[in-house]
Image (cartoon, rainbow, N blue to C red; front, side):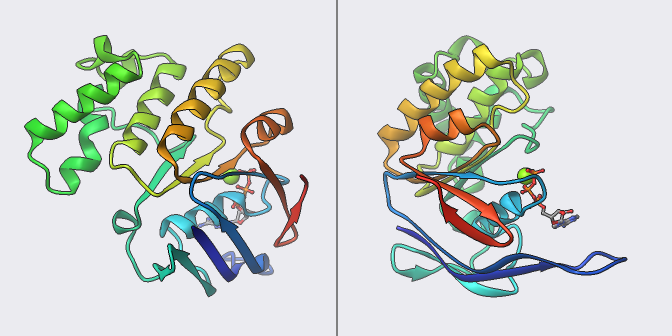
Length: 219
Ligand SMILES: Nc1ncnc2c1ncn2[C@@H]1O[C@H](COP(=O)(O)OP(=O)(O)OP(=O)(O)O)[C@@H](O)[C@H]1O
Ligand SMILES: [Mg+2]
């Protein structure tokens, strides 16, 4: 169970007035559950995910995972997989090494990490691309690699920030179904941010809207 407890965050720009983005916000996401988050541009959706991942600190409140306060843990110790639209793959690495990255970072020997990456790429139907550079792939293939990279460490939490916004409608639909299936098998707490209400309804058993610092239940 992923829990946000009384999270507050104010954005203080270098000039102009500060803005309260998140106000005393609570959220619980059970293992195996996908929650979809909608909300206007600039409402703080990406900030919310960054706080869960440990990439940004809240002004107040805590992040808990399975009954443990993980607020003080750095990102790589939070068992958190990330898939951000602008979280680019490493262009200088092969597809295989992009996917293996999280395991190497955890101290697994490169040979073993690559072999596990190959297994995952095979399951994703991407094994023929293992030694390609990521810039040789299409946008949809790159997002598949990004998902494989996010899943390889078997995270407890998966955070997706508009994963398909750069893709065309047909590919979005195909990948959505494919991602849902892979995510369902992994039993993680999933928070899926999207602008697309149809996508949100199909992925999220629960839908929330972030408005003026609070999460409102949509369904
Ligand atoms: N580190 C930062 N640098 C610049 N602006 C920031 C930063 N952190 C927060 N902000 C501001 O906070 C607000 C919320 O940003 P955030 O990216 O979380 O919104 P969002 O809901 O994800 O928007 P979008 O739907 O456009 O992706 C924006 O107005 C943004 O300018
Ligand atoms: Mg955003």
